[in-house]
Length: 242
Image 1 (spheres, rainbow, N blue to C red):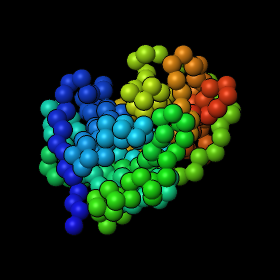
Image 2: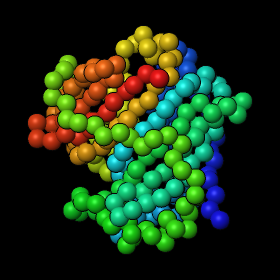
Image 3: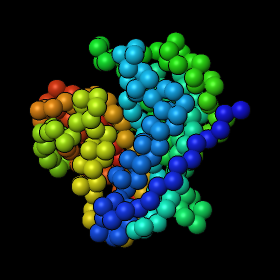
Protein backbone atom coordinates (compact mmCIF):
# COMPACT_ATOMS: atom_id res chain seq x y z
CA UNK A 1 0.00 0.00 0.00
CA UNK A 2 1.25 3.52 -0.82
CA UNK A 3 2.45 5.60 2.10
CA UNK A 4 2.76 9.31 2.83
CA UNK A 5 6.15 10.99 2.64
CA UNK A 6 7.69 13.02 5.46
CA UNK A 7 10.36 15.72 5.33
CA UNK A 8 11.93 17.70 8.17
CA UNK A 9 12.93 21.35 7.79
CA UNK A 10 14.83 23.79 10.00
CA UNK A 11 13.96 27.48 10.39
CA UNK A 12 17.03 29.61 9.69
CA UNK A 13 17.34 33.39 10.29
CA UNK A 14 16.97 34.15 6.56
CA UNK A 15 13.55 32.44 6.64
CA UNK A 16 12.10 34.86 9.22
CA UNK A 17 9.99 37.99 8.98
CA UNK A 18 9.87 40.80 11.55
CA UNK A 19 7.82 38.62 13.95
CA UNK A 20 10.79 36.19 14.25
CA UNK A 21 8.60 33.51 12.73
CA UNK A 22 8.88 31.61 9.45
CA UNK A 23 7.60 33.70 6.53
CA UNK A 24 4.44 32.21 5.02
CA UNK A 25 5.89 32.26 1.46
CA UNK A 26 8.94 30.35 2.76
CA UNK A 27 6.67 27.76 4.36
CA UNK A 28 4.81 27.33 1.06
CA UNK A 29 8.15 27.05 -0.75
CA UNK A 30 9.21 24.31 1.67
CA UNK A 31 5.97 22.43 0.99
CA UNK A 32 6.46 22.68 -2.78
CA UNK A 33 10.06 21.51 -2.35
CA UNK A 34 8.76 18.53 -0.36
CA UNK A 35 6.41 17.73 -3.24
CA UNK A 36 9.33 17.87 -5.65
CA UNK A 37 11.51 15.65 -3.47
CA UNK A 38 8.73 13.10 -3.08
CA UNK A 39 8.09 13.05 -6.84
CA UNK A 40 11.83 12.69 -7.46
CA UNK A 41 12.10 9.78 -5.01
CA UNK A 42 9.21 8.04 -6.79
CA UNK A 43 10.48 8.70 -10.31
CA UNK A 44 8.04 11.25 -11.69
CA UNK A 45 9.47 14.71 -11.01
CA UNK A 46 10.09 17.28 -13.75
CA UNK A 47 13.52 15.79 -14.55
CA UNK A 48 11.91 12.40 -15.26
CA UNK A 49 9.31 14.15 -17.44
CA UNK A 50 11.90 15.99 -19.56
CA UNK A 51 12.47 12.94 -21.77
CA UNK A 52 8.90 13.35 -23.05
CA UNK A 53 9.19 17.15 -23.18
CA UNK A 54 6.76 17.48 -20.25
CA UNK A 55 6.90 19.36 -16.96
CA UNK A 56 4.68 19.83 -13.89
CA UNK A 57 2.99 23.18 -13.21
CA UNK A 58 0.92 24.23 -10.22
CA UNK A 59 -2.70 24.99 -11.15
CA UNK A 60 -4.46 25.72 -7.85
CA UNK A 61 -3.57 25.81 -4.19
CA UNK A 62 -5.23 26.46 -0.85
CA UNK A 63 -3.39 26.73 2.47
CA UNK A 64 -4.64 27.40 6.00
CA UNK A 65 -2.01 28.58 8.48
CA UNK A 66 -2.80 28.73 12.20
CA UNK A 67 0.72 29.50 13.41
CA UNK A 68 4.29 29.73 12.10
CA UNK A 69 7.44 28.13 13.55
CA UNK A 70 10.06 30.28 15.29
CA UNK A 71 13.77 30.70 14.63
CA UNK A 72 15.94 27.56 14.84
CA UNK A 73 12.97 25.26 15.36
CA UNK A 74 12.30 22.15 13.29
CA UNK A 75 9.03 21.34 11.56
CA UNK A 76 7.81 18.34 9.61
CA UNK A 77 5.92 18.27 6.32
CA UNK A 78 3.68 15.32 5.48
CA UNK A 79 2.67 15.01 1.81
CA UNK A 80 0.68 12.59 -0.33
CA UNK A 81 -1.26 12.27 -3.60
CA UNK A 82 -4.96 11.60 -3.08
CA UNK A 83 -6.33 11.50 -6.64
CA UNK A 84 -6.12 12.60 -10.25
CA UNK A 85 -8.20 13.06 -13.38
CA UNK A 86 -7.44 13.83 -17.01
CA UNK A 87 -6.11 17.33 -16.26
CA UNK A 88 -5.17 17.65 -12.56
CA UNK A 89 -3.31 15.66 -9.91
CA UNK A 90 -4.15 16.44 -6.26
CA UNK A 91 -1.33 16.62 -3.71
CA UNK A 92 -1.89 17.38 -0.03
CA UNK A 93 0.19 18.55 2.92
CA UNK A 94 0.09 18.72 6.70
CA UNK A 95 2.71 20.66 8.68
CA UNK A 96 3.69 19.85 12.27
CA UNK A 97 5.86 21.83 14.69
CA UNK A 98 8.65 20.32 16.77
CA UNK A 99 6.10 19.45 19.49
CA UNK A 100 4.07 17.43 16.99
CA UNK A 101 1.22 19.96 16.79
CA UNK A 102 -0.36 20.60 13.40
CA UNK A 103 0.00 24.27 12.47
CA UNK A 104 -0.87 24.34 8.75
CA UNK A 105 -2.66 22.30 6.06
CA UNK A 106 -2.56 22.64 2.29
CA UNK A 107 -4.02 21.07 -0.82
CA UNK A 108 -2.88 21.64 -4.40
CA UNK A 109 -3.75 20.64 -7.95
CA UNK A 110 -1.04 20.13 -10.57
CA UNK A 111 -1.15 19.89 -14.36
CA UNK A 112 1.41 18.43 -16.73
CA UNK A 113 2.49 20.81 -19.47
CA UNK A 114 3.83 20.04 -22.93
CA UNK A 115 6.89 22.27 -23.15
CA UNK A 116 6.52 22.82 -26.91
CA UNK A 117 2.80 23.54 -27.20
CA UNK A 118 2.48 24.95 -23.64
CA UNK A 119 -0.78 23.01 -23.27
CA UNK A 120 -1.98 20.44 -20.73
CA UNK A 121 -1.22 16.74 -21.15
CA UNK A 122 -3.78 13.98 -20.45
CA UNK A 123 -2.70 12.44 -17.13
CA UNK A 124 -4.82 9.34 -17.66
CA UNK A 125 -2.57 8.50 -20.61
CA UNK A 126 0.81 9.60 -19.27
CA UNK A 127 0.95 8.99 -15.50
CA UNK A 128 -1.95 6.65 -14.68
CA UNK A 129 0.36 3.83 -13.58
CA UNK A 130 2.40 6.11 -11.33
CA UNK A 131 -0.67 7.69 -9.77
CA UNK A 132 -2.37 4.36 -9.17
CA UNK A 133 0.81 3.07 -7.51
CA UNK A 134 1.40 6.01 -5.16
CA UNK A 135 -2.07 7.37 -4.33
CA UNK A 136 -2.96 7.37 -0.62
CA UNK A 137 -6.69 7.07 0.24
CA UNK A 138 -6.68 10.03 2.63
CA UNK A 139 -8.74 13.05 1.54
CA UNK A 140 -7.68 16.68 1.29
CA UNK A 141 -6.94 18.21 4.73
CA UNK A 142 -8.76 21.45 3.79
CA UNK A 143 -11.27 22.50 1.12
CA UNK A 144 -9.70 22.95 -2.33
CA UNK A 145 -9.15 26.43 -3.73
CA UNK A 146 -12.46 28.25 -4.15
CA UNK A 147 -13.61 29.75 -7.43
CA UNK A 148 -12.23 33.27 -7.93
CA UNK A 149 -13.85 35.77 -10.28
CA UNK A 150 -12.05 38.38 -12.41
CA UNK A 151 -11.00 41.50 -10.51
CA UNK A 152 -10.82 44.79 -12.37
CA UNK A 153 -11.30 47.51 -9.74
CA UNK A 154 -8.98 48.23 -6.83
CA UNK A 155 -5.52 49.49 -5.93
CA UNK A 156 -3.04 48.84 -8.70
CA UNK A 157 0.71 48.30 -8.71
CA UNK A 158 3.00 47.42 -11.64
CA UNK A 159 5.89 44.96 -11.77
CA UNK A 160 8.05 43.94 -14.73
CA UNK A 161 9.15 40.28 -14.77
CA UNK A 162 12.90 40.07 -14.19
CA UNK A 163 15.59 37.39 -14.13
CA UNK A 164 15.09 36.80 -10.39
CA UNK A 165 11.36 36.13 -10.96
CA UNK A 166 11.63 33.20 -13.39
CA UNK A 167 12.24 29.51 -12.72
CA UNK A 168 13.45 26.44 -14.64
CA UNK A 169 10.22 26.44 -16.66
CA UNK A 170 11.19 29.93 -17.90
CA UNK A 171 8.09 31.57 -16.45
CA UNK A 172 7.25 33.52 -13.30
CA UNK A 173 8.01 31.47 -10.20
CA UNK A 174 5.11 30.44 -7.96
CA UNK A 175 6.69 31.87 -4.83
CA UNK A 176 7.33 35.25 -6.47
CA UNK A 177 3.59 35.60 -7.09
CA UNK A 178 2.90 34.70 -3.46
CA UNK A 179 5.52 37.17 -2.21
CA UNK A 180 3.88 39.90 -4.30
CA UNK A 181 0.56 39.09 -2.64
CA UNK A 182 2.04 39.16 0.86
CA UNK A 183 3.68 42.50 0.10
CA UNK A 184 0.15 43.91 -0.27
CA UNK A 185 -1.24 42.48 3.01
CA UNK A 186 -1.86 44.70 6.08
CA UNK A 187 1.37 44.66 8.06
CA UNK A 188 -0.61 44.76 11.32
CA UNK A 189 -2.32 41.45 10.60
CA UNK A 190 1.02 39.80 9.85
CA UNK A 191 2.48 41.29 13.03
CA UNK A 192 -0.35 39.80 15.08
CA UNK A 193 0.35 36.37 13.50
CA UNK A 194 -3.36 36.01 12.74
CA UNK A 195 -4.48 32.65 11.28
CA UNK A 196 -5.47 32.94 7.63
CA UNK A 197 -6.37 31.04 4.48
CA UNK A 198 -4.89 31.67 1.03
CA UNK A 199 -6.66 30.50 -2.14
CA UNK A 200 -4.74 30.92 -5.38
CA UNK A 201 -5.32 30.02 -9.05
CA UNK A 202 -2.53 30.03 -11.63
CA UNK A 203 -4.18 30.82 -14.96
CA UNK A 204 -1.53 31.82 -17.51
CA UNK A 205 2.22 32.10 -17.69
CA UNK A 206 4.11 35.37 -17.28
CA UNK A 207 7.54 35.43 -18.90
CA UNK A 208 10.67 37.54 -18.79
CA UNK A 209 10.10 41.19 -19.70
CA UNK A 210 6.30 41.23 -19.41
CA UNK A 211 4.68 43.98 -17.37
CA UNK A 212 2.32 42.78 -14.65
CA UNK A 213 -0.42 44.77 -12.95
CA UNK A 214 -1.31 43.67 -9.39
CA UNK A 215 -4.88 44.67 -8.49
CA UNK A 216 -5.96 44.48 -4.83
CA UNK A 217 -9.46 44.89 -3.42
CA UNK A 218 -11.24 44.08 -0.15
CA UNK A 219 -14.75 42.63 -0.35
CA UNK A 220 -16.71 41.46 2.70
CA UNK A 221 -13.56 41.06 4.78
CA UNK A 222 -11.68 39.08 2.12
CA UNK A 223 -8.64 40.50 0.33
CA UNK A 224 -8.77 39.74 -3.39
CA UNK A 225 -5.90 39.87 -5.86
CA UNK A 226 -5.44 39.61 -9.60
CA UNK A 227 -2.03 39.68 -11.29
CA UNK A 228 -2.33 40.19 -15.04
CA UNK A 229 -0.66 41.47 -18.17
CA UNK A 230 -2.54 43.70 -20.61
CA UNK A 231 -3.60 40.57 -22.53
CA UNK A 232 -4.26 37.88 -19.90
CA UNK A 233 -4.85 37.16 -16.21
CA UNK A 234 -1.96 35.20 -14.70
CA UNK A 235 -3.00 34.70 -11.07
CA UNK A 236 -6.10 35.25 -8.95
CA UNK A 237 -5.95 34.90 -5.17
CA UNK A 238 -7.91 35.52 -1.98
CA UNK A 239 -6.74 35.92 1.62
CA UNK A 240 -9.21 35.46 4.46
CA UNK A 241 -8.34 35.90 8.13
CA UNK A 242 -9.64 32.97 10.19
